[in-house]
Image (tube, rainbow, N blue to C red):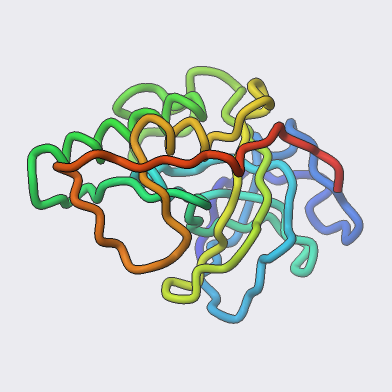
Length: 196
């Protein structure tokens, strides 16, 4: 387990603590890759630490059971995007565009990656998102989430990327041919609700 940030949040050790947006901006957290953690039902504010591709990212959020901020890789719910290591030029183009779209929706500066210092990675302080864990990925043991940008709460980030660059996906075997027409059904979309 490693540390995310070196700045400490004054309320980090309180067990009944609900973090605010400002708390999540400067945090110390644990990397969590524990296959025994069931995140289903967890929701709250988070910071997107890294966008890997159009449907995979790393979130940092408050985990009450550990009374700590944690960082873990997540899978976006209801859609799939092309793989970054795609086999065709079309697939690679879809993958790159989906990743760029995801980064824009969480206000990353274009082309920023994990090696870029955090203070240089974001366009503004609006990279804070609201997330809800709706299931667990049994293959990779990661939370499956819905995510909203707190500055645009009417549509989920899931639906926006799905509509532009994704295909329907509910955890079944991936078999989409990116050279063919995409099928998208975003009837799951809904406005953000911050009720805990």
